[in-house]
Amino acid sequence: MIRIEPRNAPTRLLTLGVPVLSALVALALAAVPLAFAGADVAAAYGEMVNGVFGSVFAFSEMLTRATPLIFTGLAAALAFRARLWNIGAEGQLYLGAMAAVAIGAGAVDAPGIVLVPLIVVLGAAAGAAGMAVPTLLKTRFGADEVVTTLLLNFVILIFVQMMLEGALKDPMGLGWPQSAPILDQGMLPTLIERMRVHSGLVIALIAAGVAQFMLARSVWGFRLRAVGENAAAARHAGIRVNRTLFSVAVVSGGLAGLAGVSEVAGLKGYLTADLSPGFGYTGIVVAMLAGLSPAGVVIAALFIASVFVGADSMSRAIGVSSYLADLVVSMSLLCVLIGGFFARFKLVRSGRVAA
Image (cartoon, rainbow, N blue to C red):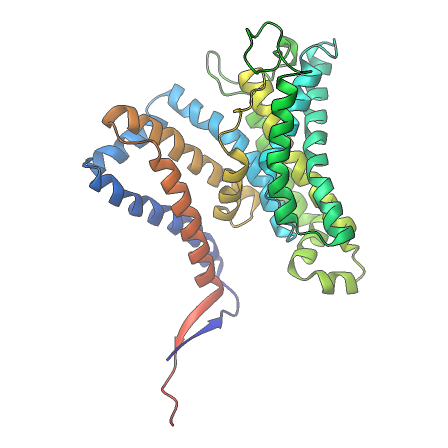
């Protein structure tokens, strides 16, 4: 007979090894459909690596793709650590992007040194508001935040589409549903000349560093972790659980909103309904792959971005579908969940019980 028993305390090596092993297993499993498609697996993965590290441009594209994933990964990681299940980062991203174009497209006439910080702050505030509402419904009425945040994504996207056909529509857009462009002085500066990677990456890395420090070294981080471990015990110890959850919600939504700001003010310059290919949902995979660690989020986001950019390059080079990237990301999440289970539990074989 085999029974499941909890481990006393997972070792640090096991905790760090599970995400790495999960990523490697996911890549190995993805080789199976590649082989069935008739592709040379070694050549395919070689093209993936070359598509990310083969040139400065390729590497900069990977960093550009990783920037919103760091923000949404942090949003999910911090919320999940408090057992606040934020599935609405996609909608919060659009709220941040919409606030950025509403302010940056001419509503405020100011120099860049004033306009850029204003766009960043108001974009984060819009994202924070998108998570604050479901959290209030949870703390006041017991509403399931998984349901409310998920459904709110669709409500927000429909609202964005309405605004792109109305108040935010670009009069010079020849009828296309897109917003007016952000003023040049409102755009985030690029980091490398003639490349798309922008200073939103710097903001994301700073946010990850601050989140890691706050989580490990601050009273706020201690309260967040206490509520996540056992809300009843935290309440008994005098921690205001609802207030802690609300503060986490504001930070989580704000980070997701910054993902939207980075995309419109750092990359595209205007808002469309297809701004995000699912950065909010992929951020959940990033957070899980990182073990809900803010520092790990950066590494996980770089890995996921490398998979997406490398898969695009592989698709162009050898004619294999770029949807392989989605397969690797999905398998990574599945492998992390399975690996996380075995990191917390072990299988023990016991002798047969006598009749």
